[in-house]
Length: 529
Image (cartoon, rainbow, N blue to C red; front, top):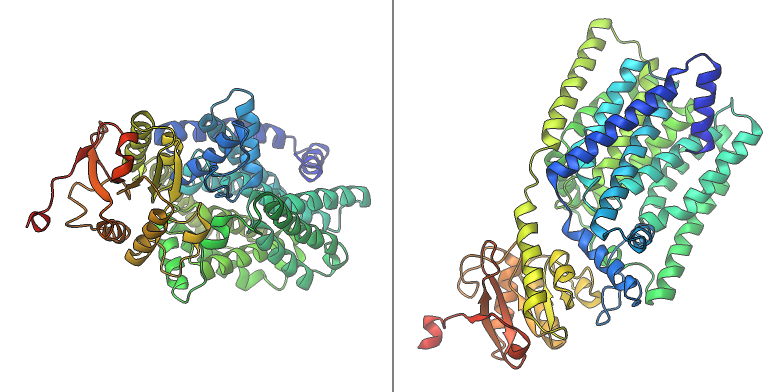
C-alpha cells in the first residue's frame, strides 16, 4: 500500500472512522475467497497465456526470454509479468500455478485500491455496492485466474490514479505530496513494462488533468516525463534484446481501420453490456457536475481522462472480440471511480436513489452468476493441450511444426514452431491481408513451407471432423489446406489423441520418420481418377 493509501487509513483512524481497516480486511478475505473459488470453478487458462509461459520456459532453460531458438522473438507484451512468473518458477512453483496466484493477488489488490480511493466520498452502503460491482464483474473474475497480466495492469493503473490524484489535492502536506509524486514517477516508468499501451492511457488522463486543473499544472509535468521515459526504456530494452522496437504482437496484431468503431461496439455489447448502463448513469451525473465538481476533483478528473483515452484507443483498434472482455476491465474500473467520486454531490430523490441502488445490487447478483458460467473455450483448450502432449510424445525433438493457435499446442509439444497467426513470427505478422482470413491462412502457410516446416497442423479450435481437403468452415483453415494441396511433398495424415476429433496434419514426406502413430488420409476420388 502506498503513502496515499496509508494516509487515507491514518486519517480515517484519527477522525474516529476506525472501520476502514476492518472493512479492508473483510473485503480482502471475501474477495480473495470469491476469486479463488471462481477460478477453481472456471478452471480456465487463456491460449495466449501459454505463449508467455513458453518464453518463461525457454528462459528457465537458459535460452533467454524468447519464443524458441528457431524464431528468437518476443511474442508477448508484458515484460514485468514474464519476469514475475520466472521468479516464482525459480522458487519451484509451476508456471501455471504462479500465473493464477499472481493474477488473483493483483485482482484482490485492485478491489482494495478502489475501496480506499472511494472511502472518503461514499457512505458505506454505496461503497459496498461499488466494490461488489467491480469484484463480480465477469471479465475481472475470469482474467484474475486466466494467466495473463490483466490484473497487474489494472492494479498499477488504479494505484497511479490514486497517488497522482492525491498529490494534486489541496489538503495534502508538502512532504506527503513529494512522496506521492515520487511513487507516481516510479509507476510511470514501470507502466510500459506491464503493458505497452498503459502509459498512453495514463498520459491521456494526465493531459486532461493538466488542462482543467490549475493546481496540477505545476505538479504533473515530471509524471508525464516519467511515462515518456518508461516508453523509451521499453523500446530500448526491446531493441537491445530482440532488434526491434516493440514486441511482435504489439507491432502486428492491431490495425487502425474504419470498421473498428463498429467492432468495438459489438465487443462491448457482447462481453460487458453493463458498461452501457454505467455510462448512461455517468453521462447524467456529468451533465450536472462537470463544471462544479469534476474539474475540482483530481482523482475524478484523472480517471475520466484515462477512461476517455482508453475508449479512444479501443475504438481505433476495434478491441479484441476474442478477449472475453479483457480490455474492458480498466474502463469499467475508471467508470466506477468517476461515478463514486461525483455521485455524492448529485441531489437524487430518495425513491430514485433506492431504486438505483437496488438495480445495481441486482446487477451484482446477475454478474456473479454470469461470472461462474462455464467458459465456452474450455473444450478447445482441453483438446489443444491433449494435441500438444501427443505431439511431444510421438515426435522427435528436432521435428518442426506450424500451427494457428500458438498457445497450448506449442507449449505442451515443446517443438520448434511457426505461428501461423503471426504473433510469434515477424514476417507472417506483417502480412497485408485481414488476420484470420483465407488469404492470410494461405500466405502464412506458404511462408511456413518455405522455412522447411515438417508438419502443418490443421487446427483452429480443434481439428475438424470433416476432411479439410474437401470442406473447411473456418476461412483460415481453408487457406492452410489450399496451400498444402499445392505442395505434393506434403501428405495428409491423422492421429487419434484420445480426446475429441483426431488430430489432422500435413507432414512433409521426408519427415515421416520423425513422427509416430500417424494414419494416412485416404486419397480423394478426384485424386484416384
